[in-house]
Length: 227
Image 1: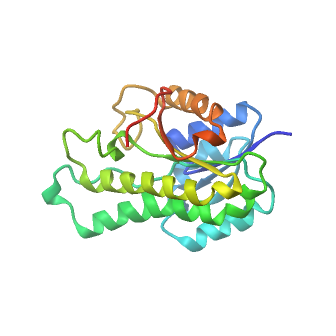
Image 2 (image 1 turned 45 degrees about the vertical axis):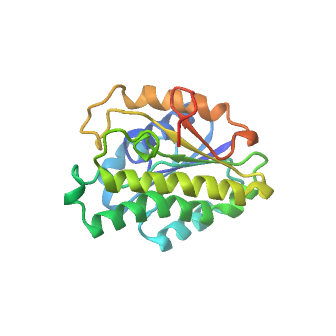
């Protein structure tokens, strides 16, 4: 039987590539998008993936998406959606900026994991993949900048580890995964790699994950990332 994967934030960029590539791999694919991003979701909506609306800033929409998904087992949950970059300089960051980044990029993936917890438990080898960032590494922060974004991704990393510990009795594994610097809308299409190649590499990493890898931070190129 084909495995089922849910990609949160599949309207464009990395999320879209996850959905498209898993479709080609004959997975049972679900992808989400926000109502506001429907114009960017045309390729997703025209693909073989099943789709529904989910907004990480709206807990009710997350729960509604879980209900739409139904009671079937969920093998892989990929939390790809996130708020973008913040202010370049620390002194320009605002409370609202911090709260928005934290709400969407850290609390949002927590809420999706919570909402889809019953379906994950029905899988024989459930995995939650939180798409993090090099910017979320505390030990790797050598230059500063983009403080609100860094803070949100660091928080996501902690949520990943904490839930990995708490969900271990349910055999649900969680990892953080950094795509590196990729050419997406968030990076203004600058970067070292196109989205399709980055996702191909991340899927290879995901394929190699076992329950013993829970609570770990990986780079798209296969090596362990520093926290």
